[in-house]
Image (cartoon, rainbow, N blue to C red; front, side, top):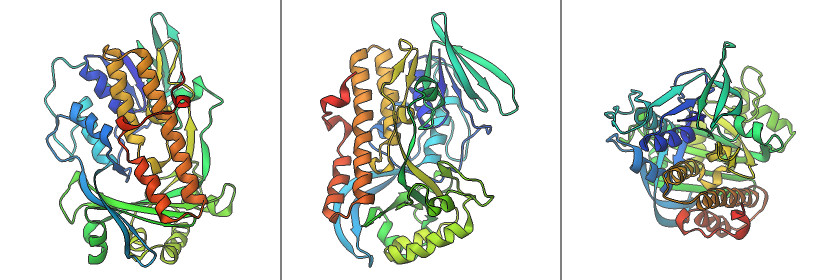
Length: 420
């Protein structure tokens, strides 16, 4: 039996992988609500994400919208570069509900629940469980938690898997000196229903992954599944990620990260609570800075949200002789430019399952997991510095993005990345 801390995509990916091996698992999710929802985010579904769904998804429905081309616009909205490249885009919501349907049988408008498999392990999902500590006990580990009402309790398992994101509680207990640090810029995010966009804007983004760069600014957009995961044309969502600089300590950063109720958010201002005055300033800036197609979707979104772009990297992935393991963002929080966060969670989950089932050695598991974490973390930092703080020709950004799109299995990690 294992305990997983974190009930988002990383925790669910690990739960699915271990459940399929016959292991009983318990997910401890700190959110008081039984379901996480309306995250409003798009996901570029890389090879490992698609492989995870291929292995463990037993729901028969489309999981992504396909994009056939990357294209770059100039300030006037003209296409100045294009490359044929097939990529798959999904939404956080659809991925989450597909995983919940397969993990613990949660019904939703997104999908049907597959029939149980007798050989699979027992899956338990407990919400409103904020982990407060853990300790070795016998051959296993005991995890202590507290609810939002002050109730306290614990669970016991053979292993503890920290899959609780870039602000991981498990990591803070193990590595209190490792800090999540702000990078100097934010991602302004949102979606617009495809049918609400003008004809010219729909044409720009339909089946396209579209980019624009100028000094201190990068924006990209692509189509993702719409309400309840629909992939019907006209009902899909145009999803944008708009990177813009907000220096640490600046009034501009304080303004954009303070919500409509006056609460200063540290990392994310969620959909629906952004300060209307702060967002109106960003709408005006969008018209001044961006190609008209991008300005239209930024100004048209009804529930924008803001994410401070951060860095965090843990020196290793296992502790207490393997009784505690860090997965995904808890191990390394990548900058979004890498489009690798969900892929990392999927890869880590599948590789850990391969390790405990005896398919690969412990040494190979650690080198691959830590190598990927360190190498892609550095790539994200480098891409962010070049995109946000250097005035480079477009070709440099295109090359950076193409290097980031190399399939993981074709990457060759430098020696410094795989030292364990």
